[in-house]
Length: 81
Image 1 (cartoon, rainbow, N blue to C red):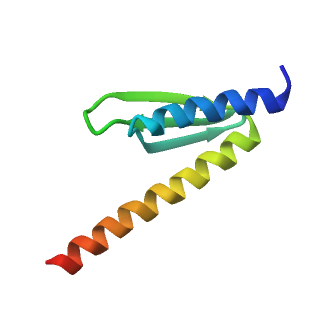
Image 2: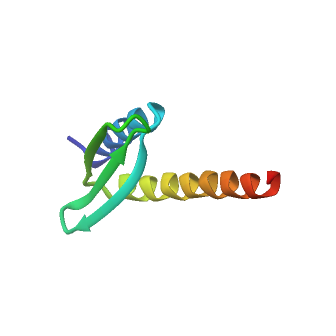
């Protein structure tokens, strides 16, 4: 399988989780890739192993967006108080 095809599969798996409202709650990186800990608001957890460099860059972008959403929610909650 080509590196690009592997990236597409890893990206699709991550998109599937985030599409079901899973959040990235932890990351462990080693020489074999990135291990993501994912958690659903209902308590379900999952682990995803991303091996390609592009998938690893992609999860960082999602993590940054996730943090922006959490920051915006916190700011709005403070402003409404």
